[in-house]
Length: 301
Image (tube, rainbow, N blue to C red; front, side, top):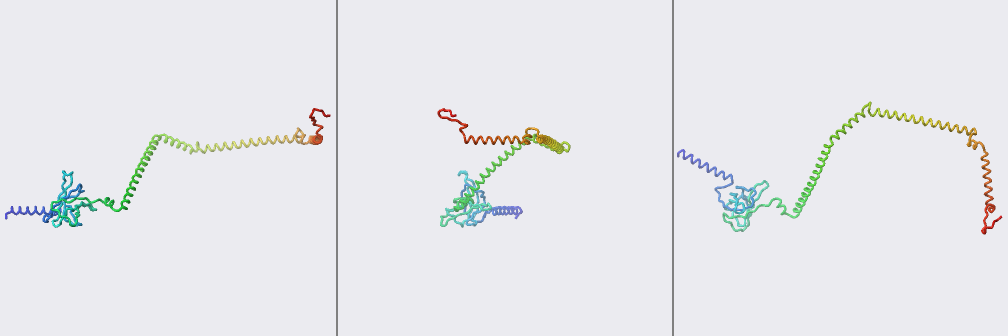
């Protein structure tokens, strides 16, 4: 054999090996006998070529091709390569599923005693329900629990809106306070300066509070001394007048002295009281002597 023939044969063998290996890595078994089937989906949710086709968890085929049929409202047509020894029934369903890790696959759901479907036939395509749909389709207590959780979340949402509103109002109030402080900052600074100056003056030992308090104490002491001196003078004058009056009384000068020293007034008053008493007794015993009354105007002697 010539070198050219050897090089050509090597190139053909290498290309064939590369093609077979590439398809093997994609999951395509060129030497296995398979039948082709089709299914239609509205949404394949990331299904790709070479994804497995399973029956009861066992791989019985693969996705060989995916196309969009624009004539049928952009529906997705999926082609499957399934082993020939597996009999597909006419009521078989090809359910698109997703595991917890996000891997896509097609699961065949078959019925016993079903009429076989010829190669190239169409299988009914379905999509597995999601986790929330599965929970909602389960028992009634779980449904009520999910409804309560949703209501609780809605309540949290309303509380969040109220909290957001309160925070907005608080922010507006803080902004108003800041504007008021900015507008009155000069006045506040002036008041602060005045207070500082006043504090400094009060702390001054010469012109501060201490000298003022000392002066006030001095004035108070002076007033106390002056008032006490006046009071003592008035008291002395009063005592002198009282002493002079008593001296006059003791010496018999004045009416008070005569009243106190001479008992004639007492004696006269005593005689007058006795005469008045006698007069009242006589008036009570002989009233006709003093009162005359006549019904016909006759005058009594």
